[in-house]
Image: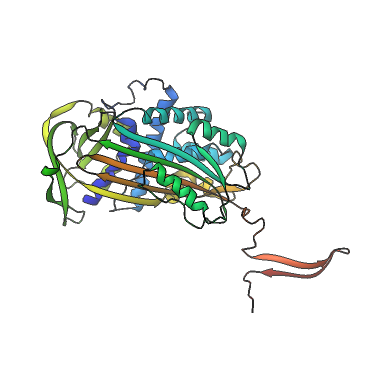
Length: 412
């Protein structure tokens, strides 16, 4: 169960951050000052996407610790969305839940959301950074770049991806924008078919509003899915927390700082299956559960294990299962708003996260990288690295002297 409990902490960065405030809100509550109706719609869309993505991932990662940031994934894909056209745009729009919004409204909403989340609570450190790294020989469409700069505050830089230092430069940016918690997202050397990386980085550090006393932390046991037990460090305190219980689970809200951010923990009742509970995490149910956490209950004791988790996952399968397969198809993907004349598609969406929970609070980070491929290798002009046909001919008469096919070059 130790492994399974941590599954729910996905709500920390992707869901709890967006939904929880000093009084958790439902979809009927007023939107934040300076925001718009479509900004609120984007939050709802991101949450729906995040819950569906989470449910899809646990199908692959059964009985494993899972920790993702739906906000990071949706923001990286949100930048990518600006480069889509045709069926690819429709598929991403459907998967991300953006059908009710124009691209302009989506972009404005992300801009408002970045401002809101990073300025919400002076006692909580929350950073969002975006960047685009493209092969310097092939500059993306100017409008695409300008949109990402204006609305996502993206750093845009051209690099020679064949340079051994290229991956180091990108990873140094990741390291800096996650305060050293995630140091690498791009493999070295960079795959020669890569034309672009679109990267989001998130960093969160919040101290509990009511911190745990380190002297109260004790050695204890945690029950695993197979009913065996594992030693853990169990924190303990008594406090007045927002609490909710139904037939399936108990829930408690642990606030950070001034209370604008919180960690919401869902604990299944004994003998309840955690995966069955997660399957019930639709947007409407979640909003109802959160609304039930709006008011403090009576004071009670809480016992919560300290833990650290580093997590990494390639999201290709999950995103394709949700309906985004066309964006990964070299023959069908349409990113002509990113590169007008290039055959470009998503090769990989990689996601990394880090979290540490202790007596003082929580430190967490997430990075999402969208790696774009091009059918024509940009790195060396014309790189013959796959089966080819060749001929020897005389140019004046155009006589073909020899013609051949090479599928495996051999030299002796």
